[in-house]
Amino acid sequence: MGPAPSTAGRPGSNRLGTAGFVTGLLGLVLLRVPIVGLVLGLLGVVLG
Image 1: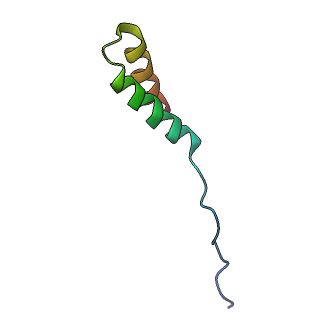
Image 2 (image 1 turned 180 degrees about the vertical axis):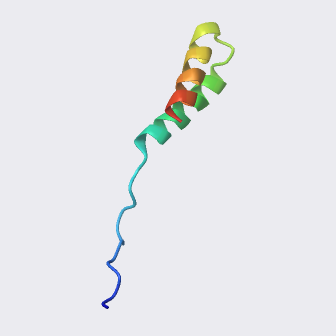
């Protein structure tokens, strides 16, 4: 049995998770703007 294959290098990225985090954060910041904050917050929950 040989050595395990190397997994070194750039780890995979989770673009949907990142998009969910960013839109959720923007939704939280823009919560005082009536429609924009709600839409971005809901979008962040869906993408997250």
